[in-house]
Length: 200
Image 1: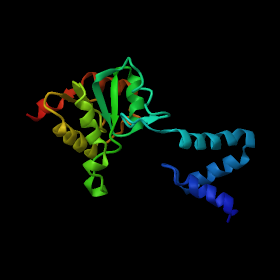
Image 2 (image 1 turned 45 degrees about the horizontal axis):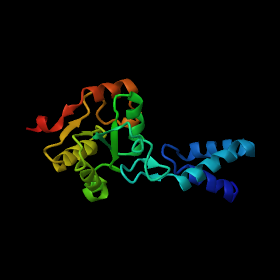
Image 3 (image 1 turned 90 degrees about the horizontal axis):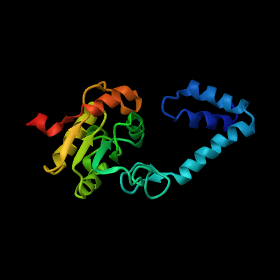
Image 4 (image 1 turned 90 degrees about the vertical axis):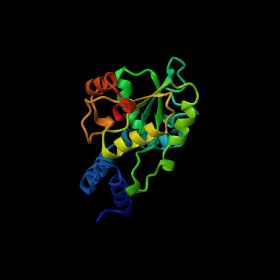
């Protein structure tokens, strides 16, 4: 129906999360209506981020160098680690201003049905970091079935000397940290609970 170049653009845009064929078509025509000076910086930014951004060698957050900005900040409290599923989950936690420790990104959540097993996540690397003087691990996985299962599994793997906490109520079950507002997430952090004590 359209030229091969336009068809390709629509097809690539429709692969983005939340973008269906009609939305992709609208975006494609919006891009075509723009002047080159207005739209080429978007293409350049996409290329730049793919070329320059990788993962922090310590916590697996997004990083432009070897370490992310959080791990490179000497003012952060290295005795406390907040475990999240994805790099995007760090942003809302940081916005609360409640947390001054470090992070560890698992890279997903346990889901055997989807083929995600413990060895597919950065759990082993977390256990190595905990051996380096960490006193508390905050499990901030999403409040979903897979997030809860992941939190329980990680808690079982951690040494007993380490305090293991989970974010308190305030986050809706079935929701994602990425969409939580600062107030709700701040209250959840302030009232986090001890996961091991509840299980005993």
